[in-house]
Image 1 (spheres, rainbow, N blue to C red):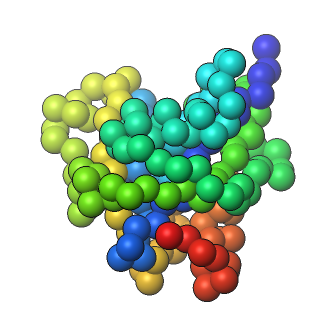
Image 2: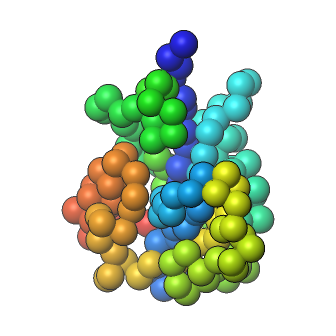
Image 3: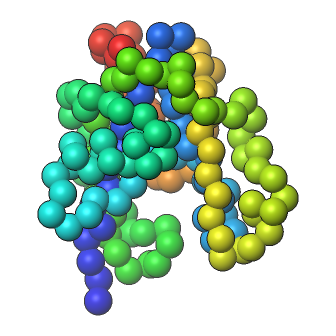
Length: 158
């Protein structure tokens, strides 16, 4: 049975004009995406995003303005059945220096990616001056990044 899969993601830019991304190994695939994930039943989008940042980055955030919601049909990259609806917000944190981040994409230990059915993830900063749409793996993230790049001069991001 097909379902709607609602996802929430945050656009976090630090004081050094860097975007936080998540590099992940999921079921044999290497994916770079924005931090966030699936909304749980009974959870609002902002609460879900705050939970995801706490789980992924051990980071307390303030969810700011809505940035983008999927406006086209997108099937799940993982099951060919579910339709994905992604909601993006600008997020802020006073503690971005506390984030444990790597400097190289997919800098996993061999044992972290040894199980093809397993998962691994780490966070990484990308300077806005170097950010490209192609840095993202998932189609909806690519749209959000294109919007970010076209709007970044007029946005109050931090």
